[in-house]
Image 1 (cartoon, rainbow, N blue to C red):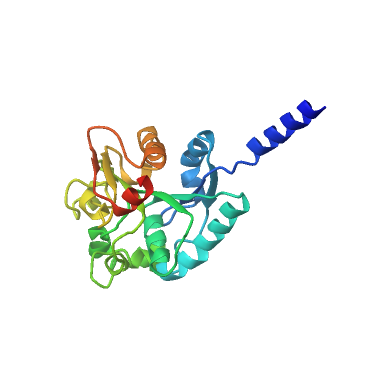
Image 2: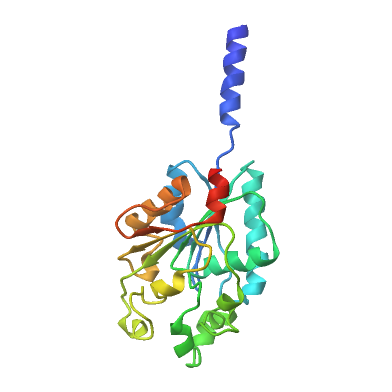
Length: 247
């Protein structure tokens, strides 16, 4: 009887071990459905996932960030997760940076941003005044240019463990004409970068498909596990947050 009880207690202890949580944040004019392929891969890899759906076209970035992220953190912590990672696409990364300007996430783990306009996008600079742009993209879309008053340029260096995946293929050659090459049709590789990042990898994928392609998903999983990307196009940088983690 004692042996059976001990086995049950051991099994309960294994079941009570909390999984790391991954918050997924989609980009502008998209929904949580855009991140479902990525979510399934993360679930299969053993993470608890929170795939956030938020009204990206209805509010400015500084309104969206505190509206969206605290709710996701509550859901992760309800699962007893002690580490919370983020995987973001496009503007989702800007929301996280905006939130961290004024708030700490003490249990923050690693962050992977896919196609983030960390320095803004020249596409917005060139077409934001075209009739219909604001109606479709909302106030947040108007804030993603490269000007000093645009939100990306107002955000400082990152102080968390960040890996960036940048696309180098475009299905929109018209928009690519506004961008320094290489680019993904919405953001140039150069403008995905931000001071303090730990790693960067480029992939031949266009902006709308970054979160769906298996080559990208493999890189996301690798960074969450190892804190780096792999392959010939992967670059690693000195990263104080990573040194602290390894120490």
